Amino acid sequence: MLIRGILFDNDGTLVDTHDLMLSSMIHATKQVLDKEYSADELMRGVGTTLEAQMWAFTDDPQVHQQLVDTYRGHNLAHHDSEVKAFDGIVEGLARLQKEGVALGVVTAKRHDLAWRGLEIAGAAPYLKFLVGADDCAVNKPDPAPIRAGLEKIELDAAECLYVGDSPFDIQAGSAAGCATVAVLWGVFSEDVLLAENPTYVVREFSELVDLVIQNRRCAFPSR
Image (cartoon, rainbow, N blue to C red):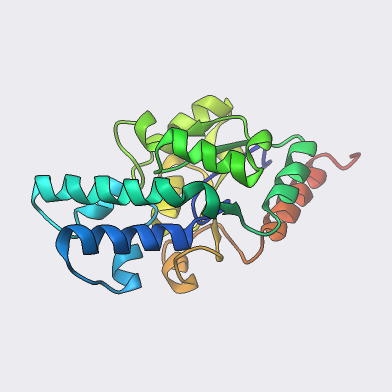
């Protein structure tokens, strides 16, 4: 397989928002439900939309909306000061872009806020597009958002990787026909990710970059 394009998840893959997401979940569940949950309970749905995550805490539509709104209020208030790229991301994206790899993002986060975070983190200049939660009728683990990303990147699934830190990312990427890359610096453990049979597993972003560049130079040995 010649790797011509890469679609990335956002939170937990390119940008580090773990503490912000956790503090926002704690704030919302405490304010609305007056309950405390473990970090594992609060973060187990990361990789799906916020709306999907909040159904784990209530089956009442009105309470559900209060949880979503309270989370978003807290998250937005602290977003710009807390979002940052993981180590090596910006440098790695620059190497991939120089190599001629098409790069985009497919995320379960709302489009505008996800792109704003990528701009703050310094990753946006290397990305051709973003597909957000509000750009699709359904979201991960359904493959539809990945397929929308493939249309934007104008490549076949067999030519692209989907890279993410959650089991939902691997499920969606595989269902869309992409080779998948599980990254180990996000929320989920290696065991949880390996259970989804990703094509590759990487511990550092530089490993992914080296893998892709080696793939392309084997295909184009004169480079």
